[in-house]
Every structure is written in C-alpha cells, then in structure tokens.
Amino acid sequence: MADVSPWVTIAVAVISGGGAGFGAYIVQERRLRKIYKLEDRAEEVARQLLSVKKWPLRSYKVIRHHLGGFEDDELRKILVRAGAIRFKSKSGEELWGLVERNKNILGVVRINADPANLHDDDLFDVPKKE
Image (cartoon, rainbow, N blue to C red):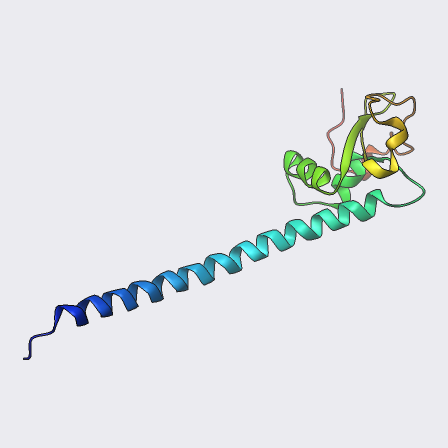
C-alpha cells in the first residue's frame, strides 16, 4: 500500500466537510422558505380581511376563525406585521384594523361601538362565559 500524502487527506476532509455543510444548508434553506412562505401568506390574508371596505375594524374572533391554525399570540404578531392595530369595542371585544384605514381613531383605546357578530359565539370555537 502506498503512503497517502497528508495534503490528500486534508483535501478529502475539506471536500467532504464542505459537501456535508452545503447539504445541511440546502435542507435548512428549504425549511425556512416554507415557514416564511406560510407567514407571508397569513399576513396577506390578514391584510385582505382588514381591507374589506365595509368593515374598517374586524373582531379578533372573526379573524381567528378565518386564519385558523395559529396560537393567539402568533396570530396577533401576524396582524401587526400586516399593518394592523388593536382596539377594544364598547363591550370589551378585541377589534383589529389597518393603521391606514383607522387614522381617525389612532390613540383611542375603546371605541363607542360593538361588532355586529358580538352574540354569534355559536359560529366560533370560543368558550361560553358563565
């Protein structure tokens, strides 16, 4: 058996390590693209829900119904990234609307109205208050 030069050993190790590292990079990149694509889509859907001319504010209950599959805090972060801000209705219901559509009430915490679907709990997966 012939002696292998240390340079050949080093070259093989570098090429093997580089190949493994590049493979791991490709796998991670694809995974991250999938995750961010989902978040981008969720932000777009949230933006479209909040852009309906008829409703400058939407109840969180309705938004959560249409954007299922997210934890509450995660969904709220998606709404903020979509350009939304939170308000409370007269009865304390959580409402969301786009900043550019609600500039006239910026700084108002509680508005003097309630959403039309306030008593439609049977349409949504929310526990009944006792």
